[in-house]
Structure formats: structure tokens, C-alpha cells
Image (tube, rainbow, N blue to C red; front, side, top):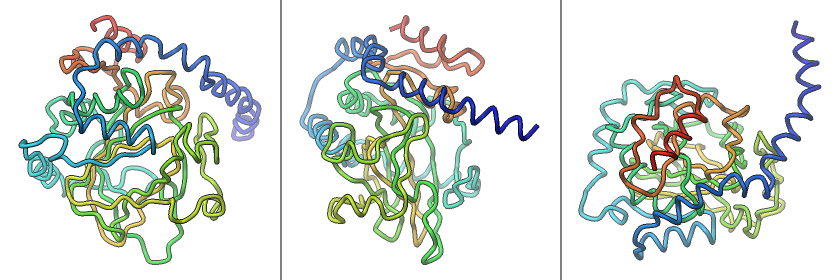
Length: 316
């Protein structure tokens, strides 16, 4: 049985790869985002200096940094988020094959609209920036609340501790929030500005749908100067917007740190939806820039994803 599976896998692999390359190609991808781009244009809202700066940095560099206080002045959100996280600390365990991370939520998180982190990720302020960058009404994929664990000195980098590009879409945006101060010893997010699609390093080590890409050790350093590899340290409350189709890594910590990240994808064909990591996206939902988008009624995981997305689209 194992041999049969191996033969089937090797036989189907080229077909699957060709299928994903076709789906990720510019004409198909562009056509599949037409409705999402219309939704975005119809609901762009009002620009302001912070939104313009953050979205502009994303376009230019593939990454932008702000703070909770800058995005939500006068709301003092950090203590609420830290209090929520503190209540879950004893539940933190490793639930994936990334042994350097512990998760405080389920690996496949439910879209709980009462969760203060989910509220934040779906806040109009965040959506406007994400949608400005991707140029459409994006797909909210999921969020995680993680603890980065210390690794032994000299330990070999594993998985996302290595340089890589994420596989899920041609254009995407992850939003990270540091819940405590993060310096270089706390495993900060490290990114190569300009490595997003269309950037200075956008063609180096291209994605290999549906798997992204992990260059061999030392290859990125041969192509990109060390000064172009930026560790994004920051105080508690730092918010990082990053297109993780760009070259990045993180998690090589000397001591623990807490952070949350939400994941938004361009509203085109979602590579992860089919073969890559489908379980993560069963509770996905399309949203527009409208703050009153009726998500709750359409997030029943028992319904096929395509029907849920279509239902939400019609309700807009």
C-alpha cells in the first residue's frame, strides 16, 4: 500500500504542480480577483496620514511597522490584549511540528467575533490598510496566538526559522502584534524589504506553488547583502504588516516572547485552500472594507467554503 501511495504521489505531482502554476499565473489570478477589486473600490473609506503611510510602506518595501497607539489613538488596547493572553498562558502547548512555538489557540481557530484579537484584526482600521495594499477586498484566513520558545545556542534553524517565502498567494498580508518587548534575543520577525513581488528582490527564489520555497542554507546570504536583512524588533504593542510572499524568517529566540498574527490573503485563488494547508482555511470568510460586513451568519464550517464566500459576497 505504501508503494502504491508513493507511485501515485510521484505520478500526480507534476500534474498538481502544473495546475497550481496555471492558477497562480497573472491572467487567471487577475480574472479571479475582479469582484474583490470592485468591492474594494466601492468601499475605500476615508484616507488619513497613518493609513497612507503604512499602506505606502507596504507597497514600497513589502513590510510596514506601526503601533497600536498609532493605529488606535486614545483606546489603550494593549492592556486588554495582554490580559486576555495572560489568562491563557497555562494552556500554551506545542500543537504543530514547529517545536519552537506554543499555541494558545486551536491550530484551526474558530472565527470568534467576541475575541479581542479577532475584533482587532477585523477592525476597519486594519482592513483599510490590508485592502489598500492588496488592492481588493481580501480574504481573512485565520489568526494564531503563539509563544516563541527559546532554542539552544547554536541549534540549527528549523522550518520558518529559515529564510522562506510563504506559498498561499501571489500577494498577501500578515499582521503581527508583539505583546511584550521584542529585541534581537527574542526571535524577532526578520524580513528582506523589497523581496515582495515587484520589489528589488522579488524574483529571487520564487514561490513554487503550492509549496512556497525554502532556499538552501547560505543561498540567501550569497544573493542579498546582510544590511538588507532587517530584524523587526519593537516594544510591546508594535504592529507589523508584512507580505510574507517576500523573503522572511523568525523565531530564533533566546527567551520567550508572545505575539499574535492574523493572516489576510488577496481575494484571488487561494493556493492553500486546495492542497497546501486546507484545514487552516475552513473558517475563512471574504470581507469588504465595510465595518458591518455580516460575517457571523456565514462562518458555519459545515458549509462548503465556496458557498460561504459566495453567500457573503451576495450579502454585500
